[in-house]
Structures are given as structure tokens and as C-alpha cells.
Image (cartoon, rainbow, N blue to C red; front, side, top):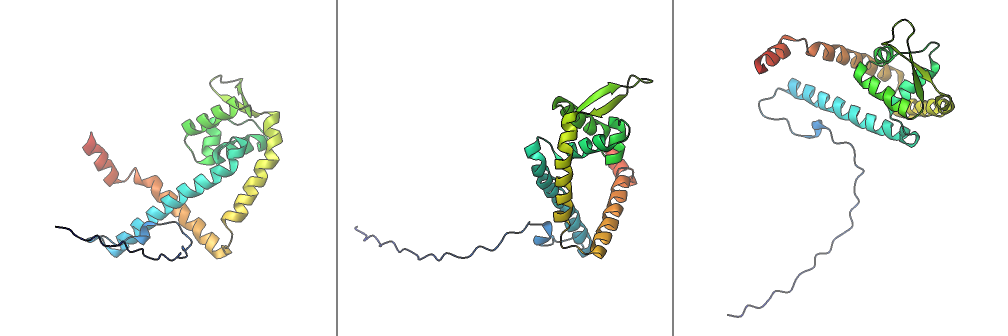
Length: 194
């Protein structure tokens, strides 16, 4: 049985304009069944905060990459240069709201790259006093300019009332997050796992 082959039809494809992409947030997805509207809004907000934080961190780290630093490295370095007295990794951790181990790793990198030196404390030899090097002092104006640009660009288009509300809301989220690990629900879950 001989079947005649159909000639292939060529569809004409128009070059469509691709809309500008925007970050996809969890709010773009449909609400799952069984989840209240309020819980869905909270889940969306949490996803948005985490996504925004990660993307902002990555974007800002890229700005410092040409100098061999991350944003946190640059923050620690500027604090060391601008401090009237020598700082310790512990004091830096408190000022920056980070854990001491993370700051110690940052200081290790800065020391390896020649930006800071560590002096042993006179009274307590377990304490490292951080001193900025001349290399750190030379790069300080550049880092200060990068931070000034970040502040201008990141908050562009925000009016004062939005800025104040965002600051207040983020402070509340931070306070709430600090209490999560101590909440009875989290403690019960951790006890269950033991």
C-alpha cells in the first residue's frame, strides 16, 4: 500500500515582542486549596522577602567583586578603618547583627588579602584587635562611593513615608524572627526530632 507523503506545511512565525521580565514572586502562583487567604498572603510575603533579600545581596556583592570583596567584607573593612579604636570580631558581629563565626571568616579573608592585621590584646591574649592596613585606607574612598551609589539606586522612587513604613515593617519582621526559635511550636518540633 502506497501512501502519498503529505507535503510539510511551513507555519509563518511572527517575531513577537517579548515583554520585559520582572522577578517572579510566589504571588504569581495560584492559591492552593485549603489555605486561607490570610495565610496565602503571609506565605507570599515571606517568599517575597526571602527572594528580595537573596537577589539584593547577590546584586550588591557583584558591585564589590572588582575589588575582591563581598558587601559584608566591604562593610567590615570600612568599620575597621573608620573606628576610633581597634575592633574585635565579636564587636563587629554585634554592630553588623551577624554571628561571630561569620565575621571571623570575613576577617580571615581580609587578613589574607592584606586589608587588616590582627594584634593580640595586651590584657587578654585570646582577643584579636583588628588594624586596617594602608591598602585598606587607600580603598576606603572607593568603597564609600560604592555604598553611596547603592543607597541612591536601591531606594530610588521611594517616598519618605514608604521608606519609614518599610523600615518599621522590617524591624517588626526581625523582632518576630528572633522569637521564632523560642516559640513553643518550634521547641515542640525540635523535641520531637530528638
